[in-house]
Length: 311
Image 1 (tube, rainbow, N blue to C red):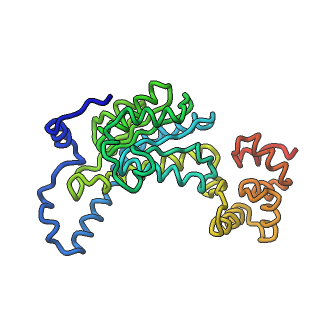
Image 2 (cartoon, rainbow, N blue to C red):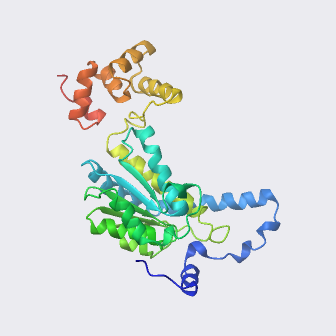
Image 3 (cartoon, one colour):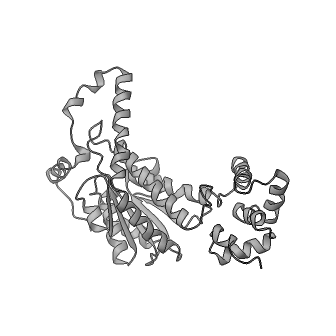
């Protein structure tokens, strides 16, 4: 069971966090004109990119490790509470339509379960046991990666997830916004994006949330690039699940090949609607079945499939 902290202990912990620091120069912000407050917030947000930039080597190292495992069939699993958990769920939910991943390949866990996406689940973030149970339900393997997300870097749910995953042999990443965090220490790859005190004291859905979103964007997007889910800067594995995405699919094929609409429609039909396969049909001059085989042999990497024999 997770040991309980006294109110005094917890207050001392919060007092030591940069994300919780009070800024006396903003004590009368509520009396400022709306435009001035907006300018202050915009100036705060502008500092986040630089904070992320200072951690790019750590981020890149983590991405390469994730991609290596996912290439062997592993999963990318986010675990967090509150805003951090919601950001993980958001990133995971956008991977299937963007990169045609299986819904089980990138997973977002939030303390308290799906209900916590829209309402507060009291006490869920304080439980390491809950994190262990959520991960055990997924049956972790050594090819999986678990990313604990917590602005403070002290959230028991996120730390518990990382500790449990590491004990099971999975790759672990700890993403926080405070230096020397317990979360980063618990993980093999610690990423601490220190954005400083918030405009509203302790409201880590602001700069800290923005920083976490930027890093998660990188983790998933660059990993998918490494896995061959793109061709140049085109989303060639996009899933055409609605009219907008079907139109985007045709546009992607056109941008990649320069083909006319009639040829694009023919190729997409041969490819069963798969964008990457249709591009190979057009660029390599092969039929749909051959394109499918070549992509399978190249583990889905379009450039590699284009360079193989046309057999």
